[in-house]
Amino acid sequence: MDPGPISRSVLFGFLILVSLILHVSGNFVFPVSHKFQGRRGWSSLSELKAHDARRHGRNLLSVSSSAVDLELGGNGHPSETGLYFAKLGIGTPAKDYYVQVDTGSDIFWINCIECASCPKKSDIGVKLTLYDPKGSSSSESISCDQDFCTAQYDGQLPGCKPDLLCQYNVVYGDGSSTSGYFVKDVFEFDRVSGSHQTSVTNGSIVFGCGAKQSGQLGKSSEALDGILGFGQANSSMISQLAAAGKVKRQFAHCLDNVNGGGIFAIGEVVEPKLKLNMTPLVPKTAHYNVVMEAIEVGGDVVDLPSDTFDSGDKEGTIIDSGTTLAYLPQVIYEPVMKMIMSKQPNLKFHTVEDQFTCFQYLEDVDDGFPVVKFHFKNSVSLSVYPHEYLFQLKEYVWCSGWQSNGMKTKDGGSITLLGDLVLSNKLVFYDLDNQSIGWIDYNCSSSIRVKDDNSGAIYGVDAHNISSASVCEDKLCSDTSVQSCS
Image (cartoon, rainbow, N blue to C red; front, side, top):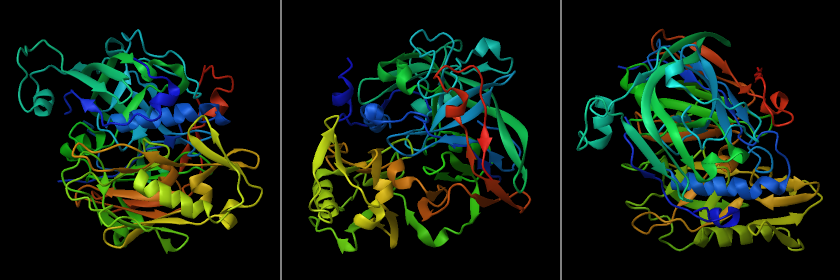
């Protein structure tokens, strides 16, 4: 039952995944876009936050050992795009699919031809395509007795027969769900063949074929063809690539909310250097969780209860590119907001859509509001600037991207969830081999350099921006185009 856009926006919970999820070298780069690209104004804010609520609820390739450039598009501003997405070529002959890039989930799935409830068009401005296994000569079914399936269930399911498909089912926090079966097919990627040069390559990967969608997943307002999970589980793309011996379990993204798009690369980033700015991941957690130790607002440490960051076996702080805003437990949210707004005591606040704190401000927000700095284990810090945590609703009207979060871990601990509002305009590097993550402020419209372990060569990788707004000005897509910035 759909609780409505406002109620959905405050529903939190981790996804119930009843599905089968599935010597190293090489780098891969993926182009990213923002999901609500081309959509302006505050009419989409509730949908955006409702999307975050669902995201909190849900919680292989065979290519040559070289970098692959996967193009991205989008824009990180909550009042504009809201999410980043990539374009993938799948099947033989290949067709283009637009999928959300999501480090907060594991399964990669796309909508399939037999899905009657799947959206046929998107308000985001991309052309939707239903995947047809019978229309691809390279598609293979995954049965319940195959290794991929039994590995996810820790054994063969009761009643399994060789001709039964390997099913998946994901239920989200607002009641939305996706279900279907796993298939294997060929993917096309741009292999990095030199500095700022690519050539087409392909390989095979196992993914979910979505046969049924419910709730918001079936609506056109935020529709994409699927979700590309980059979590740590065996079903994720990064894990499948690593299991095939094609890459290290390392990747990076740089999400550009200034010009849109950005960089998404699998492999070791050698420039800019990040090794001195790494913090460990919390062991045995499903997401990319880190240990926060303190928060500063304008250089002053926020006075919080002594056990606020005592994570122990709790989830701690989650880094999630699939979430747009930033969600703080009430015990953190209240003092942080109070310290931020105390710098401007004469502001008059109003609430938009019953959930966003907004105000009129005529000056430069970076001059009038403080920097918020999060401190993590190993003396690693992450600065969030006023122009990042405040977004412009319309001329001279600004709203706060910080949200109060009532979400709890299964053992009752509070969770801080940092999405694109915090991660944009930073190069974020995930080193799963060494279970650590790091970041650095960066111009995401520029380029990075990655190392190819097979040859030892260092290659430059440019930023990209899949421009959906220029493709579908009237929200009715008939063609696609890609823009690249170098």
